[in-house]
Every structure is written in structure tokens, then in C-alpha cells.
Length: 509
Image 1: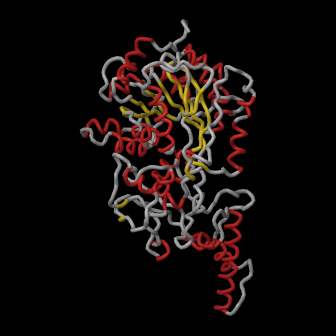
Image 2: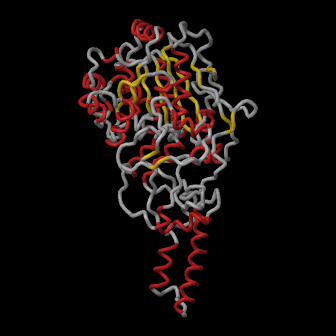
Image 3: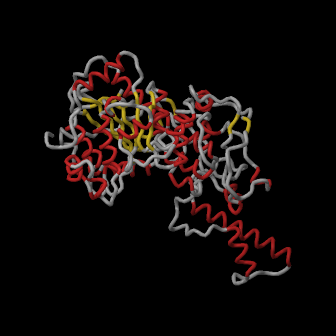
């Protein structure tokens, strides 16, 4: 790579950073596209130390700072809490602004983050090479590929290890296997790389959420990459297998290629793993919410300014962890146990059965409408045709307007004795994908319940009002999955000698 801007990791720098870690100092992490901090939370819990983050969203950036830099003086805290545009701020400027003087390659041991992959399908290997030659090329690229910006940060701060996270489709994005192409470049830069698919439910999170994870470690430190072994077991619904199989289509073409970087996802062993954490385990202890059924919930923005004391409900092992997570302990109550104002739908929620989706919900709504129409006609002593204002008004007040044939997955009632399905970013818009399993509460989940499903402890603070908080949680990496990955990486970085096994294989530990 003598004529390229991307350079190999200097051996002396690797030894310097590794020596610090072997001497007992916490590996220093920089979190890019950090969101509110799911990855940072897991890594700090595993013994790493967050030194900075880059996040464009103002509420998410402040949330990250409130949880990882709240003990700093106010002026320094505000520097961390400010939103940062990764396309505009250079690594040296970022670190200097936050008080890390000198060369930017001296301060970061581990880089983590989940860069979006917009337009990468039209970029691929050739574009990676172009950026290697011209590190400013992304500025002239109207597609604004942020994945390449992540790689630019890798090249400048020169971490001795890194973690990338993305959706499974990144393995088959318009015919490109982005993870494979990224590993090719990182290998040239001096890293040992592997990637796989991991589902958070197998690592103690009460949610079936599958993501791609790529780990790279300086080849002088590790000749192989290790992924964590599952701790929990469940037989995943068929839909998750289907999604995985689609994502792996491009990977399968590389299975005979001994130089491929993909590692088969580790399998959970029912005989040795704990049962998966269920929705009841995750949120069953949180206070019951019925204000909306009693007319005490009004439309409008809701903020986290009222403490709701914990109930006396028994605690699961998971719930205890959420209240006692080191550094985020909480034994009083929560301020973000807030729900959406959806008065048309409470009666529908109450009638839905566990696992019901929108077609079933729509049918329940029609039945409700017929009952209400019959009652109204009996009260008034006359019938109302479908053309009357009264009929149409009652219909609109009872039945959601979505076509059940076009939006079958728009709604879903959770099952108490199963993990939740994947939380999505659009949780910040409606929440119908996660209707509480308790029919007596007849509601969608609260902000804190969403945080619990992502394994965020109750002492974790979310900045902003309800909608931004939902969005932050929906975008996050589950903290327990991040911790499992961080534990594995910490073990690899604290080994005094490089692994001797073949660099073409990876282990699950």
C-alpha cells in the first residue's frame, strides 16, 4: 500500500498500546455513530473505558454524555454532549477539542460503532480502493457513504482492535457483501478480521434481534478472531431463519474460498444454556399503567420529570440486573415509564391475543364497531346506513385505516412467555409493533420497557422527550450483546502473546 493513503498499523504503535493494556490499564474506546450508547455501555461493563463518541442526533449525543461523561466539569461535559457530524469533523479535531493533545493515533485503543451503509451497494470494492488512494473522496461523493468515513477514522486513530455492527442485509446489499469487502481492506492495513451474525436473544437480552458483527484485531496481537459463545437458548421463529438465509446468499458463494472472512454463527446448546429471557422476565416487575384507561392521559409531549416508584412485584434474575447494573444502580423508581396516547386503539389492544398481528387486530376492531353500532342503534331506536355521517364517524373512531393485506406486521401483541421481537427505529413513531402482553393494561410498551427489552439498565438516562427516547432505544445495540462481544475482545487483547492458530479460522469462546 505504498502509494495509498491508508497505511498499515505501525508495529511500534501496536506494541505501545498493547503494553498499556497488558499492564492493567483499561482499553480506551471511541464510539462512532454512537447513538445513546448501547455499545459503549457493554464495553465499559467489560472493562473498557469510553473516551469519546461521535453522534449526529442531538438527543442521542446528550444521552451518551449523560451516561458516560456526567462526572466531568460542566464545560468539558458540554463538549461531549454536543452533536457531532462525522462527515465534517476530522479525528484529530475531535480528539483535540475534547482535550486529547498530540497525534490522534496515540489515544484510541479500540474503535467501535455501527456505520450506516447508504449507497454502499453501488460502491463496493472499487470504491474502497478509491478512498484508499484519496481519503477525501467521500466529500465529493453525493451518496455520502458513511461506512467509508468509519474506515477513515480507523486509518487515522489506528486502533489495535475494532468492532463494526450492521443489519444482516449488509452481507447481501445489492449483490455486494460489504463485510467481506471491508475485511479485505482491513487485512491490508494489518488486521486479522472475521465477521458473523449474532442474535441478542442468545446472549441474555429479552429480544430476538439479529445483527452482523465484524471484529478486527491487529495481526501482531491475534492471528485469529474469537466470537462469544451463547449463554441462552431458544428455538427462533421461522421468520428469523429466513432473514438469515437471505443475508447469507453472497456468503455461501464464498464457502469454498479458504480466504473468506465469514464465521458460521455460534450455535446455542439447549443442554448447557439458560432459557431465553422472556418479556415477562424483562418488564413484568415494572409498575402497571392504567392512566390512559381512566381518562388521565392527555395528548401532547411527555417528559421525564415525574418519578414512578417501583412496585412490589417479584423480580426475575434479569430485572435484578437491570436495577443493579454497576454504575447504573437504581432502587427508587423510574421517570421514563411513559406511553403513547392512542385512545382509538385501547379496546382493540385489550381484545388481541398474544402473537396477534394487524390482520387480527383489524378484525377485532370490526367486531368492536359492530357492537358499538348495535348499541347506538338500540339507544336511538333507529338504524344508520353506511352512508350516514354517524356511521362513518363511528367507523373512523373505532377501526384503524390501514389495509390488513398491505400492513400485516404493523401491529403485534407481545407474548409474555417468549422474548420480544426485534425493536425497530420506527418505535419513535408509533410503537404498535410492541403491544404489551397484559390485556388489562391495553397499551403499547413504555419507554422504559423498550429500554429493558434492549437490556439497558434502569439507571441509564435518556435525554429528550418520549418520541426521541423511543427512537434512541430502537436504534441501539442491546447492551448485553455488546458486553458479550466486549468480554471476548477484552480476553483477546489481554493475552500476553499472539495466538498461534491459523489466521484462516476463528474460534467461538
